[in-house]
Image (cartoon, rainbow, N blue to C red; front, side, top):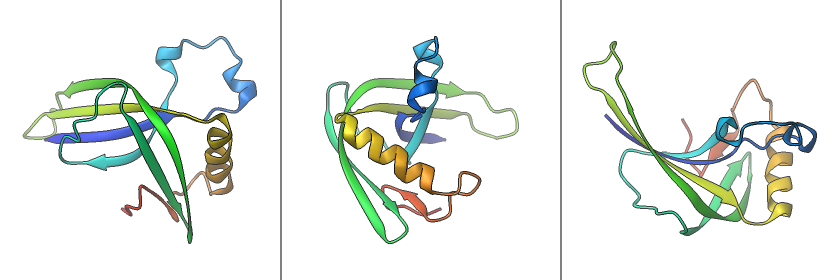
Length: 120
C-alpha cells in the first residue's frame, strides 16, 4: 500500500514550544492524504487551504523535509510505503491563525475540520 501525507508542525502552544524538546520528536499534524506521489521536493513553496465548517483559510508554506517510511504490518497482506512531506508555515501570523482555528474545534472530534477540503 502507498500513502502520501502533507504534514505541518503540531502547533504547540508557545509556552510548550519553549520547553527543551528534541526537535526531531515534535509531532506533526496531517493536513492532506493522497494515494499517489505529489512529487514535492525540499524547498518547494506551496499554498495550503484548511476548510473548517463553512469557512476556509489559506496560507503559504515551504517543504522542509521529505520522510520516507516503510512499515511492515503483520495484520495486512501488504506492507505500507509512506511519504511524508513536512511543511513549515511561512508567516508567523498564519501559524497563530491556524492554531486558533484548530483550538476552536472540538479536539476530541475532527468533525467539521476537513484538511485541504477532503472529508473522511
